[in-house]
Length: 385
Image (cartoon, rainbow, N blue to C red; front, side, top):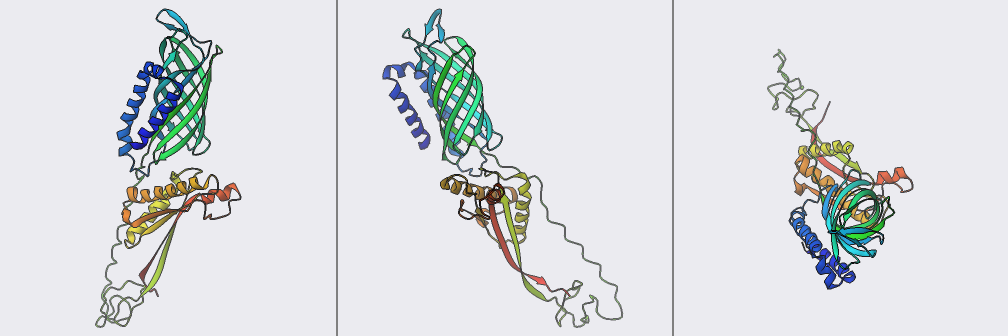
């Protein structure tokens, strides 16, 4: 909540630098709407911060900004024709919703309330409704193109809009953006805007695709028909000396007829490869996580440390953050989807510092975008003949 309030204060400081007290009073309806949208979003944001395994796909948030009209734009104030001086003479506030259907591509819809100053010393209301297709160049930089309908002073215009922006995550699921855009219609109106948004990214946890059940124990072999030779289980020790009846066939036994055991180390490794700039677990990687969970259930004394890694693309600070997110995503899958106790799983991120192979080709960089885990247990196993 403190973060949200701080960002809203910064937004309004920018507005105050452009507009005097009198102009802000005229735009009080827009400012009040933006504040109300931020406050309504705050409880959901606060209650969702503990969902660190969320996958960032769907987002929603308030937006506020300055709108620059074309000096050739005309409008109506009642029955009076009004004109605009051009430049940043209007203010707007609203809300946007979006969805990333891949790490790079997404789309969004937005609705803004618009209030503009006219050259006749008055102001007129309006609204903007639009849709953009967005491309994320990396974790921070994005651009978009889309269509919108802008109504100002009772005059409707359809525009093509091109935009570019910078996004910074201030919390796991909360991002602050700064964006600029320019739009053009078929009547040669060219208008522009600058804005900030506060996006909350909703996550989801994928449900387990299937239920894993332990195999039913094999039915014991029927006891052999008694014979004259008094060695019922066939282990080479007479029944009158055999202290372990029905020894399984093929097991070596001691002089008392009991199975001999030896210690053996059993090792299992987990490797999950991730897409570029993503902590989403690909569907074809989930079977190995399920097998690892079964192995841990069979050996409840085992704990596991999941190590996250990235390739050398991007900044070191971002790669460190991404490696920790990848390790946390696999940890949450073991706990939430397969019932492994959280106390048995720890995570650590190494960023780009421990490549599996040299980062000198696209194939090698793909191999370095991974998590690794190794489990080892020593158990007693029967000695076979």
